[in-house]
Length: 456
Image (cartoon, rainbow, N blue to C red):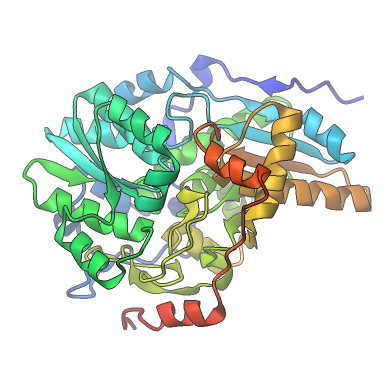
């Protein structure tokens, strides 16, 4: 008889990982390099450090170092909310009547309410260490902006946040948390920057996008002495910091001799998914174990499932480096869906390469189906999930129901990236049955992809 698995598996404080894991070190096919948009040559540290913190540039470009020791100051901060629990979803299993065993790694147990704090505190630390005055950034639903404002407050840094306009209006309480921590929050696109003015002139009725907000944040950074730009997803350095999610999850599973068959994460830019799967993918790359890994994205912004693997600008204003990724085109304007953190036109270069190499799967799901899953989860597991996380919940439920049909006792692990208590406007629309599913047409995607930069 197998041992009874606790409802929540906690690691000891001494078991918090002491180093971040860089999955690129084990990738046979490395992610394609960032390109200088002017020369189309790989970006160097000297070119990047005018925009990013110098140490973060080194982390960004390092394809070979497997482990990066976590500085003591960051480890001490992590102890405020880490280790995060790994939860056995017994009540969800019972509600579904499935033989599957479902686990989720819960990252919402901190003031920012999401996994974003794992990288925010690291990036703020390196900015402070470099002697900077402050940082600029973008945020979609607000989780990243909230996390960064908290991290900047901790280190005494100025924090300027460009928040996607529709989220700025949909999620005023998350905006106010940022302001409480001292951040300056601007709806994007705005008239504060030249690129913002240009985007508004071309798309006067736009509700904004992460690509727009990135352009504004980068311009704000390079035009203010003593500032650098920081990003909450997509970049290699961010997935490196977020590897602490997967490292903790694997350590907790190993304590009880549990091996997941399926690992599921929501996918927008890639920070949560990349962090969750990193040590498992490392084993897969080294031939030590095999896992089925599923990326779940919104049908309204389906970069993996309907995008093109190509070099593209990381931002709508076309001022950032070019990244090779699955993309819908930097000019793609997603609908104002409630999963603001997943409204990005592209995907992490690391995850894009892994997907291209057939090492993971991807699927897209519609908004109403996502909230149906979120509602069930909230009712039986007691936590109101963020809309982003609920994409992973949807897929986990679907896989568990397949197990019910076949009788297979598979073990499923998914990432619960954060809570949805600041997303009640979305839940209101779902409960009032006024929520809709907006899915881009093939023609809309083709028109955006036609504007991709010409890179061989």
